[in-house]
Image (cartoon, rainbow, N blue to C red; front, side, top):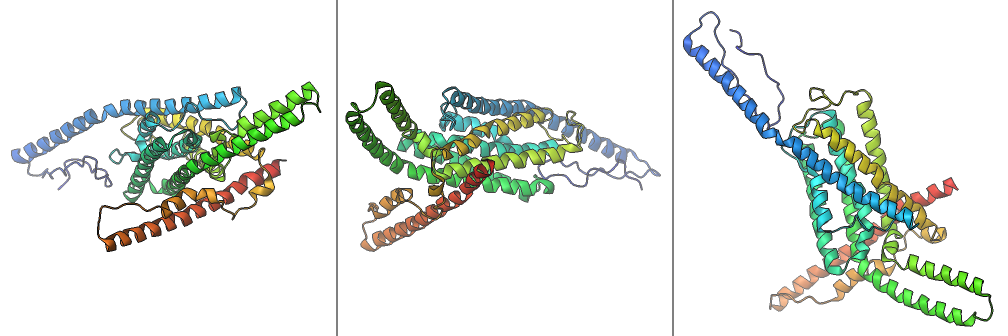
Length: 423
């Protein structure tokens, strides 16, 4: 007894078409029924293979679609970069790449690879593409952070909620791919690191969003106080200094007011933004290291038959990897500059107060804790239980907010130490 057809691959994903075992044909006693069954199964396998190729053919176009969405995000980040150089604001205010419904939609398209649970992707390029998408997401989240300060409270809540849903979806789907070995064992550790980075960046964004309303009020009060002080000093010194010196001092003072009075500058100058920038740079370095190690011995990546490229996205996967790799590098430039530019405006001694958390970090949560929220229940005992539950949840949130701030200050010390080493 010999098999009528050679064996098939022993390890196939569940979501792939698994060919039915062909019947054994007795070569010593051929009969019409055995030959008919054999030919029928061969024809069925060929038909299913053709149908699978037909259904997977649009995936190349989807890969190009992902690349275009990634290129749009890169273009927006590059325009913010060029705009910062043009106006000589090296903390790079966000004008084009800001958090809104349109940008979240484009980012969701660019994140197709990490959320794809059905397409087999066992090649080196395919696996690197998944990691590259996670690194690209870390980069975009860090670049989106300054734009939070330019929103009103309703827009801030809506956009943060939408971004949180997207990031949590990416993390959960990546975890599922790790559990089902869609992400291969050689890439699992790096994927877990990126999942942790994404989760921490999301926590940083939410913590910053909670602080923004209070920060804006404090900023407005201080701005008005400084403006009055400048006007008083101006009247007192009118007769004491020359016109040129007076003009120079006024320009310098108003420039400082305009620079430090910007909500986006206040956002990028806090320790949460510094921590997100450092995470962004680390994600870039990890990705470049992984890509270099994986492709060092695999130079042939442009053919579909290569072991490094084995997915339904075919040659479009190379375009995705190249595009998002460029995005990781380009998007990391602004966070690096922000770290060092912000330090020039602040005293290093003040930054060393790592374990001191100012009141404004938790002011909004404290206000929610002290406010009495009306519930639908009219029973006194039920209302008391709900208020007690509310206080416990907000008490936990206040403590967690302090932990996040202190953790970000500790991470921010890395940028201070690195600048001291450079100097």
